[in-house]
Image (cartoon, rainbow, N blue to C red; front, side, top):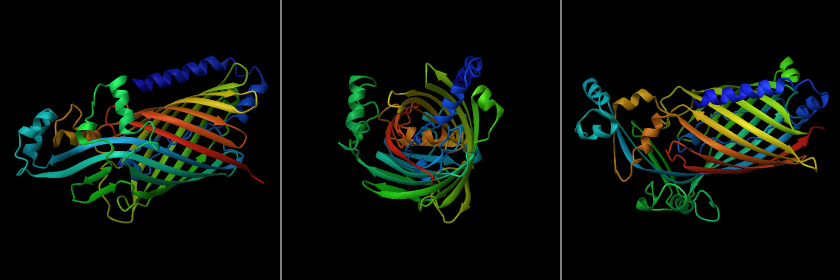
Length: 409
């Protein structure tokens, strides 16, 4: 339903501004000179996702005239208590499991004897993602960018985790919404850090407190076609391709993805710009493999969707401040149908205890609020991302970054 709403809003913006589009050549010039949207990488700091080259959708309308460098840091609080899963392999057992609700299956099988594929997973702490981006404009219509990905894990103590620490989140729950310790952070212990996952082949992924690793390099190409509807209706398209080279020992493989975005722009008041964009993409995992890693996902393709509303205000000093709302969707890391044959076990401390593993078979989504301040050469941006599915992978996520542009000689 939410996708239809976003598309409906896009159509409204198109209708409203069609009559305005030919009023003044000044508007065309203003839109062209303010074409860039500084959208940070709002991808979730997911314990598996950080090892995969996921698509970060692009909502620009043309290649910039300058080289640019950007550095950003994201911090996400993850709380996933230990859960063990048994994927049943016997056809008779699978049929019995399929006809039972997931929460009663544990009592229907002798798990010490039943044929199954076993997984174990737990994660806690603040996962930080670091990205260094370099963008190379080839022409007005073609652009190349490079992004180095790195990650770390820590306990999320002050002053490095003002919003994403366990204490801050639990203060919010107690005083504003959620109640006392709804996800059992205090039961398992606050300010813990550790990730441990064992796949069905007994291959293990681990991260401990203060671990740091470089997880990969992404190479992105974007094409911005020059179309009649650009000047007539201020509607723009772009097409992208991404090669992701994953460098960790847990996922020694390369991924390849394609994406396309459509963006509608309109002038509000004097020189303020309202933009509304939709973007679709698909990533083919493991097009190349150069090692034997952990089975993080049994999906061949990760499909993603983003929607963006951005309002850019021109200030008296000709600098700009932008406010944005971003919606991000990705299909599940594992095939949904497999959940019919899985038995989950763990401590039933709260009503969400099973999410540690069950969320791997569910679609992922999150909403982000973004604020950007831009000068002639620099852009500074912050964002806050919230997962509304209560899978806590992560719960709350924040990000901050800076982008510097250098004019070509």
